[in-house]
Amino acid sequence: MIGRKNILILLLIFIGFNISCSQKKAKEKQILNVDTVQKKTAEELVASKNTSDMSYKQLMNILNSGSVMVHQGIIIENKQMVIEGAGLILNHAAPKENPWFIMHESEQENFKNSLLSYDIVLDNYAKKLAEEANNEDWLKASKTAHELMNSCIVCHSLWRYKVE
Ligand code: HEC
Image 1 (cartoon, rainbow, N blue to C red):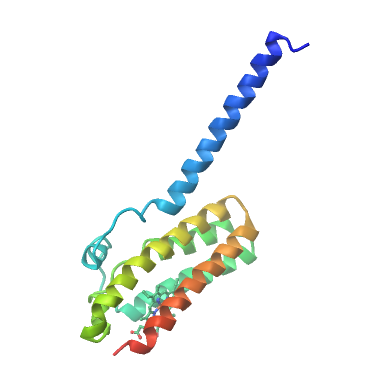
Image 2: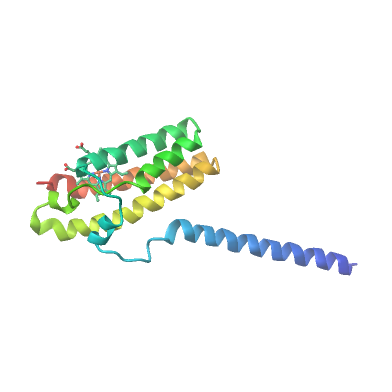
């Protein structure tokens, strides 16, 4: 016999399950889609960052330190190290000169598009990494760190040989 009390319990379980599903979806959305909807120009992207007097190469070396920290943090299971490494990638300042100036004029518009799309890609991986490390999900974090590194390398294979 299914009593009234049991039906009530089943109903509560059902409601609880739905709430947790929709919270999970909202969280995923937060990690993956935050920036993908807004379409900035490269000028707006640069203006949205803190200013600095470093070169583009020096900025790249900061990104490199961030990814080294991320990898090291994962292997020694130090979540704060991963979070802070990801922070270096997320919160980097803009270089003193517009980054596209390192390319020949005929390539600048294309490089601007790469800057815009990779900024979103790197930010999303960095956010994901911070979250996975925070959950001590080292296997997932390791996979994401690999994907992050791979995006760096893809951009390099497209652009480094074109620097003037
Ligand atoms: C938008 C494309 C792009 C992305 C994305 C990118 N890079 Fe670079 N990176 C470049 C270019 C272009 C250079 C060459 C700069 C130069 O020679 O002036 C470079 C150079 C470098 C260098 C060499 C710097 C030096 O002192 O010679 C390092 C290290 C580096 N990148 C690390 C990274 C890391 C780590 C990531 C990912 C977290 C990353 N880059 C993502 C375009 C990119």
